[in-house]
Image (cartoon, rainbow, N blue to C red; front, side, top):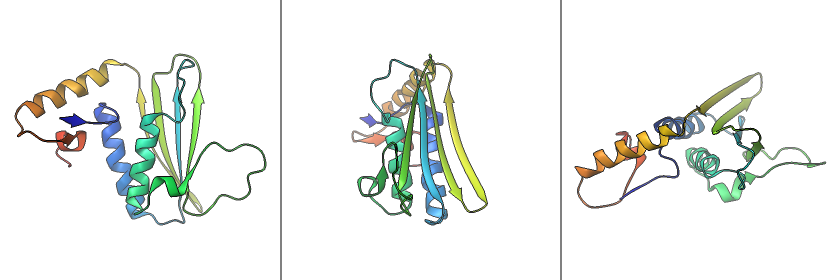
Length: 149
């Protein structure tokens, strides 16, 4: 069985990069996960955004539920050091855009994936199925499929 919150190859690579960057940068860099989807999407943040947040938290040796900041509104006070923020945008026919921003003093690093075609999820699922066909029974992830598990 191959489990993944998203079968896009690009999103899974973004997840790996997010974890690696979070490992490399300390809490002097704030982390924000920004995502946008079509106007009909009913959940926020998306499962993929949460997957990216989990990767960032893991990179810092933390549990996301302990350092997650949901959408902000009103007078929220100063951002808490080490927390991971989420922003969810909805509009139009956007299939999916996910960006992880690492914001430090004087510099900012952004990692971004844009989905323009829903077929990319099918291509990833087919790649996973072909890869999985040659494996011993067990549980695998897209990281295994990509050779980075």
